[in-house]
Image (tube, rainbow, N blue to C red; front, side):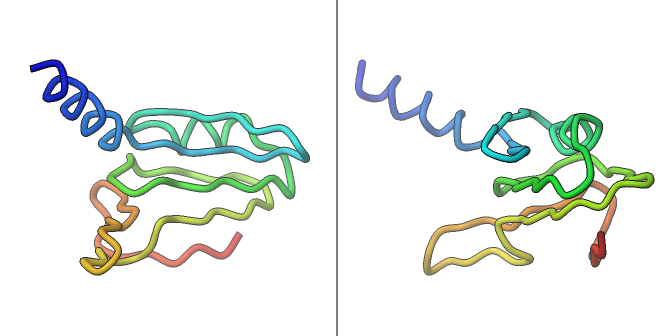
Length: 96
């Protein structure tokens, strides 16, 4: 029973979307659907944001030069990786 609980807890953690903000050598992790918006708000020019797999809320970037990387643009059954998706957007291309 305890092992089952640990497996379920691990699965729930994998479902949490994260945006990791890298500013120099400093990393800050934002969690949940608004993670990308929070990371963008905290970022300054030339920072890097890396998204986990999963679905995040739409975002706006105003006047910042950022690099944003996702887990991929489609699910990969071979590696078991799910794509990074944005709510309400079927496809997009970032040029920041």
